[in-house]
Image (cartoon, rainbow, N blue to C red; front, side):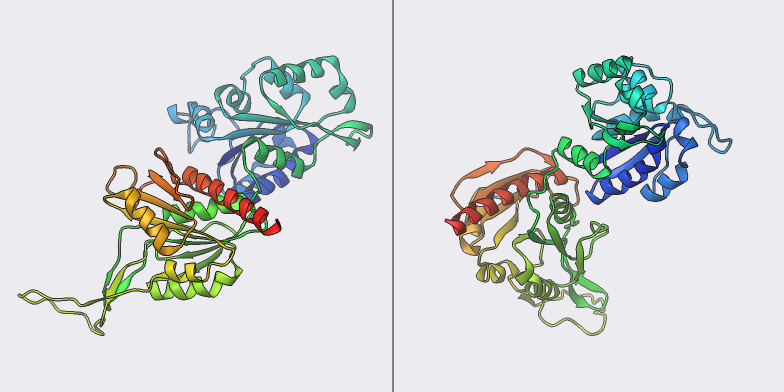
Length: 407
């Protein structure tokens, strides 16, 4: 999920850097918008270094190397459409007044009007300014419009006075942002082992057998599990994706390497999600030298690769096990057969021949087949949204298993 942090011109502006880091640690993608006054307290370079993104400071570019153009003129619309939340911290009395009255005379105030994302404000100002009837009226109007307010704290203020007005603690602001976005920590204490991507089985030193898996589903599961507080172990075949930050990342190439990596780490896992597209066969006798082209046909003898899911199921214990089935026909029937044959808790089946549900795309269309015999056909959605939906199922299974063990 993407969050824009709006920084206005108050002494507490330096704490916005801590907020950016706290939001990133929650797995959120952060970009920063600064008012002109904010730059008197902290430089854009600080936020650029933290986010790795351009910090927006003006409605129109003033740099000679990048003059104002149509793209820069509508940049506030682009930002407004790509973010899931806008948090203004600190929000000064002046900026709150401009928000309450619908003014749009710089990038940040224009962004407030242009976005349909959640808007969260964390006021910070002198106690007298906060308690002034005009400020209180502005806060009342903003609340009535659905703006989420993170109440300021009390204590010693920069002006030398004591009372309410100091910026809320960074951890509290981050908590409110996550709560507003529906991010939960219901997998805290769980260790989720995810497999992702294809495997490659050598035919000779330059050729291999593989499949079209991009790894996107498995990587989305790893990302979503981390957002929900889980420790994540990601065992991945060769893909062109960056693993989620702070996940334990185990790169492998062959099915045998994936098997060894999964079984070695299985004792640590409480949840196993086998999203990898493991090759079913390998060359029985890989050539040690490149196979030369000939004019006649060539026969390649294949041998089965290890059934990793079956081996994990045999050692399942109290773990929650999720299997994936990529099919091209008889989707539900094949998924139910796999669920029974492999003794898993949930099978996620998709017809890879359907548009928007196959390999190397950003969306998926799946049918969930559960151990209790029920199933659910889910509509097309992004793989990250699907990962969230699947983890809802996992969280429910873990909760039910916990109740059963304690009864």
